[in-house]
Image: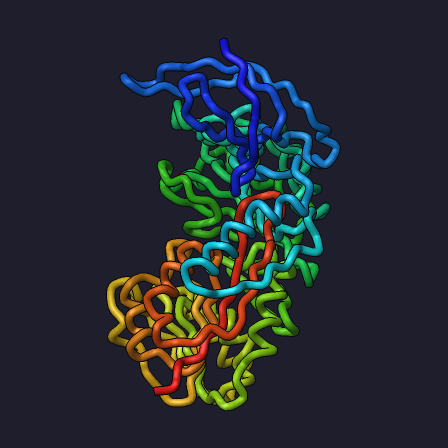
Length: 439
């Protein structure tokens, strides 16, 4: 067994050590100066991994709020001072944009670093266990009774469901024996309304199992939450809050208010997991919306989030999204809130084709693509046909930078911010504002 010392921290909050063979290795939940007793373990031919047998912490963990920090695969930075967290994850991004694109982004800290998430997905395993998977071990679930980054409402719901499962643990899906049915619990609690919903994800077909009669009764009698929903998907599908729904009580949606606009969010729909933490980006866009633009182009529009928020500022809105259900919601919601506005919401795979994209005079583009970025075709379309103004929102500034490098030759960078809606994790969000160069 060898002893190594944690030398520094990486941008994902992992500690960096020099292994006995001289290679640099990243380990989580460690801090510079900590001593690790390690050994090499052969996992495959010619491949060895570093196994930590003992950690001697030479720093105080008084910052840690969570009882299972260091085991749960969620937060990785609670043991690090918040200012240091920001420096670790912001500095490489800011430096990279400045060096490669000549762009300067303003960093903004979060006002709330705990109790900020409006959605949490928990794995349910025989035991009964409700928790988060251990980092690096998909089959190991760390039991959680209180999560420090979700609300008190959500933590109470977590305890309530645990009590129900203690009464009838047989309903839990056993991935080895393939018996039972319950795989996941999803808790969604709005930040700016009283709405909340509990979503139980089962294996398809389990709804007719005899135990479900008793389980439904236990849920209705023991759970006080207004909306309870069961959904069913394939047994091998490790996807939560997705599938054929069964409303046990209440409704299959919940309401959230953002910038004074009401959103009706389906149980299986993506929505900002920290709406209030995302407000700096929304305010940034609202304050800079060009008064001269008549048309809004909303790429990767989802349920019409940006279209609804900023529709008042435009005569016409065109939204584009891959998912049919999202387009239906976006179109319906927009028409209900802006009945006198012209709009078009179309289903299209922007990674495969940009043929449906319309070019119009006096237009502003807002795009918020997936983590991997907007894709080559979209960026080339922006370069060749893009409107005068662009707001590029991203949950992955690194892929955002690669996208921007494709079209920046045709645009001037005006302003941008980098925010931290997910403290104690390496994830960030950003928005960049561009104006097309004069010919």
